[in-house]
Image 1 (tube, rainbow, N blue to C red):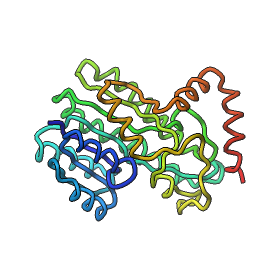
Image 2 (tube, rainbow, N blue to C red):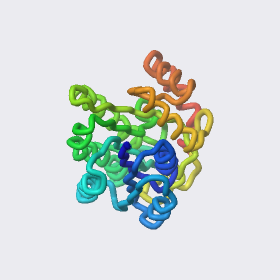
Image 3 (cartoon, one colour):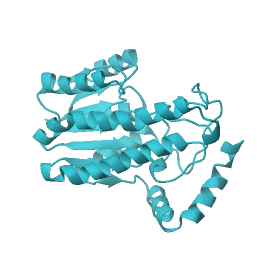
Image 4 (cartoon, one colour):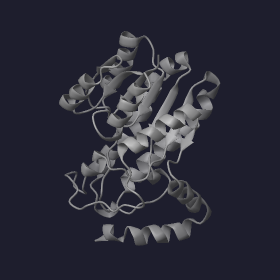
Length: 260
């Protein structure tokens, strides 16, 4: 039976992934900053063994506690899903430095550090690392400089790690969703670190968390290394590589509202 650790598991894509993983028979360790909601979610999953451990994923002691809990409660770890994230909607030149630092800490430092701490267990099980990235990791988006930078940094770091741990039997799946109907955007930070005051601009179809979770589960079963979940996302990634200036002009037109 597979043991899966999911970060940011109390809502949005993390919760959809928790349900999908249990449906295939996984035992789960769930973590989230929202302790009350996390405990409610964990208690509702009864088909297999599920434990929860709330805390700030940026805290090194929380990271160590999660790895220790995997060993103590299950004796192993097969899949680490780095899902927890935070975004902002604010122009680069107006954004306070602490906003950039927070976005980078949650989206880059925390998942990379947790991954490295969990690596001995993943090597022992010849397991898998799943990282929920974003189209923003390879395409620029007005008003999202910190988020784009953090997701890009994580993707690059894990692509390097992929080559380093392949011989240990550890697999990596990097997921590149577009726009999802999840709380990450509802909780976006503004330039001053408070809640963003304007609605987000989207591109393409707004998919549900459940739709995305099903895609991730299927990609794992197929042994994919990178997941572009729909045709538009895949074509956009190719266009950015082949014609970046054209792509940049189109992006600026589409997200022009961010300038105002």
